[in-house]
Each structure stands twice: as C-alpha cells, then as structure tokens.
Image (tube, rainbow, N blue to C red; front, top):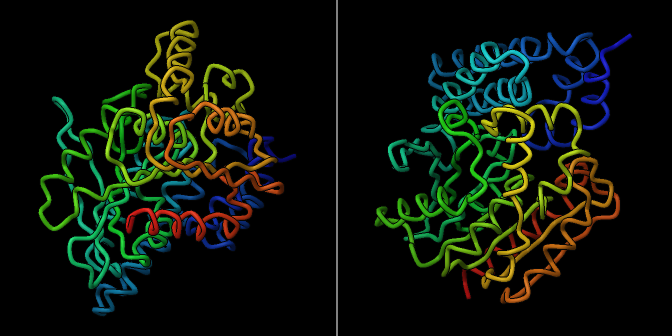
Length: 355
C-alpha cells in the first residue's frame, strides 16, 4: 500500500506543481511509482536530472532559449523534491542546491532574461531574481513574496504574468525561505525583509521606485499584507490564500505543512513554536493597510481555511480598495483553477501601476 503522504501528494498537489512548471507526466510518474515518502526527494531529483541533462545538451548546441527552458523545468523538479522534505535535511539541501544552480544557469537565456541579485539584510544577504520586461523604459516593479515551502525557483510562470504586462519582477527568498532558510528562521514581522527589498529597488536606476507592488502566495499571503501595513506608497498588494492568524490554524495544518513550519520557525520546542505562530497575525495591523488590496481564496482550501481571507477583508478598513476573489471550487492558492485568478490579478496590478 502506498504511503499516505504520497497519496496526499497525488490528491492535492497536481494543480500547484503542474501550473508552476512541472510536466504532468513527471508528476504522474513520481506519484504512481514512489511507494514511500522517504524516496520522494530522490525521485523528483532524478526527474530534475533528466531536464538538466537536456539543458546541458541544448547549451552545447548553442540553443540557448531551449537550454533556459530545460533548466527552469529542472529547477522546478528539484524544488518540489525538497520543498517539504524536512525529515532529511541533508538530502533536502542537496536537491535545493541543484534547483538554485539550474535556475541560475537559465537566467541569462530566459525571455526576458533575468539577473541573480544580492540584497543586503542586516548582517546577512537575501538572494533574488530580477527580470525586466522587454521594451519598457523604467518599468514598475512587483515584488514576489514566497510562502512557507515555496522558493524563487518556482516562480517562472507567475513572473511571466507581470512581465507580459510591462512590469518588472523581483522574486526573493526571505527568512525561513529558500536560500535564506538555513541561516534565518521564519520572520513574523515580515515588513523587515520587504523593506530591505524596497531599499534595494531604490538603488536600481532603471526601475521606477515610485511604482512598487507586492504579491504573496500562501504564507506569503500573510507576509505581503503584513508588509503593506508598514511599507507605505505601494501601488497595490495581492494576497493569495494567506492566513489571517497562523495561531488560529496551526493545529489544523496538514501534517507535512506543520512539520515544515516547525522546522523553519527555528523554535526550540512546541511552546516556543506556538509563540512564534501567535506573532503571525494581521489582527492588530490590518487596519494600517492603505494601498489597494486584492485577496484570493479558495472555498476548498485544506491548508488555510477560506474564512481567513474574509477576516482580512473585514479588518483592512483603510485599504484604498479591496477586491476579494473567492473561488468556490478552488483549493489552496486556487492552483487547481489557476485560470480563475492569475490573469485577473495581474491585470488588476497593471491597472494600479498606471494610476
């Protein structure tokens, strides 16, 4: 009998993984041929190796666009091998380093190309990908904020939505995420890293520092509005399936998600972890949001109950505008019905950048 965690992957993860760039055949192969969760990371790393090999072959033939596309696919496979694999940190980090390496190889050959950037953050550095739309002088910038288990190497398709509409994208790994997760735990006061990213944008003369928007996915759907409450002058904020209060939903999180939160929180014991979760609340700060706010929720969300989106909508009393796109047949981040919100939210952000 298959591992219940593999069965959960088969039942709930296809929308996210496929809509974010994993070939459907790879997803099907891994979820049908892998019998134990202990083999999950290696199984997807092996799929990543196939795509990385195709990228190397295309690169050798000077087919650089194809090489970039293959390397992106490899990075996505490696990423989804490691994203929740906290039960084996060594194997998780090995797959993650392959994801970073593959995406870094892809960056100069993407259309439009990208640049790996280093963002000062106190005594540490955060790492991101900056991409600018073709033919747009001094474009506005959308800062893409990751969730609990997402990382910048997963965001190619989401970046394209904004790039195709004339906006630059800056996707970064913050505390507890991606490349930063090994040195920096989750930061409930996420306005701190976002402010560092905004300050970095201000150093780039080719970007319009007066037109900045935030986009956050899953836990990033808490981080983005949290940052918007403190970082003023934003053109808009998109919050996708984020918790209003992590303390309220901590006990009901799926087992793998909760294990991931515990690991990346940096908490010393259960009591300390719960204290960290309790700090992650919009209750006292939502009223400080003044920029336009676009909220997305799925009524079938098994990770973050859709009521959390309604709480944010109700509490953000000073937002210049609130749109709440609630999808009745949507799961977490509505990845199973991505077409019902992705284009609409990107169009909304483009309109806000013009206002």
